[in-house]
Image (cartoon, rainbow, N blue to C red; front, side, top):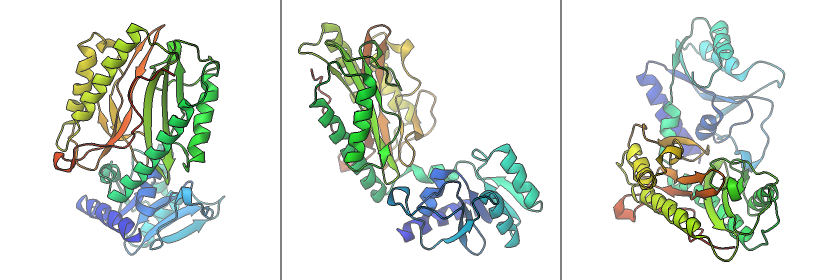
Length: 368
């Protein structure tokens, strides 16, 4: 992997040089990990004139889940109660003779930015912008392989839950059990707070589990994600508790399923982000549910659970091959409940079989 990280840093260095900055300071944790192989708490990465240096406060924990620093980097460990690693990096860049330093202004606090200027007043600070995030958009096959394993873990955890008795158990209890199962199957941990919603809570995006108990006739919607070696993916499914779904439940489920299928089918290299969103949104809008729809129908995943691209009505840009995204439309009816269906997929060209579905748990409306 050392060559992979070195190549990523070189691409970033080229972008910084094109913008007039010979040195670059990366402080956003996910970006540090992408370029360095690990992101110990508070660590920053300096792409310097003579060498690349990972600066951190205290010795990094030697834990595979947290990643290990690229061996080709120089690791500079600062006293845990000493200087801010970002300030130390700016000082180092100035000592190397750099005249400018590109920084991630969208991540630095105002206080930290001022501290950099104070320690190295002759160093011109430039905005790196979202350069690293743009590099992270397209995943290599090793990254996709990690996402694929994460997807297998969420599928396993969800399928095991469906085999257990659900009636009478609380949303909170089911959420905790799902997160335990994720770890049992090899996940570093949940990718986000697991959502379990029953009855009138079902179908709400980002619902936090409560002490409400599962009842016969409920919709049960679940959204969970796994982190595996730093990479995150998610799945969302909706079920009916009992032997016979009501007519309105079947109708609503079929509608959301059709919207999700339309969104999945729209995934292709060159497709505009907004067009993918529109494909799913139009199905629900035409059925009269447009007013209550969420602001987006999908997003990118990777080292963070919610990263670019954003599949939303006003999103600018087009999809590339090897970009993993979610497609997750849903409808919530106040007082009654609703449906969410969420998959993680990788954009692939038609010649390679079209979008690759990573989360494969059935989307049939199961009565549990």
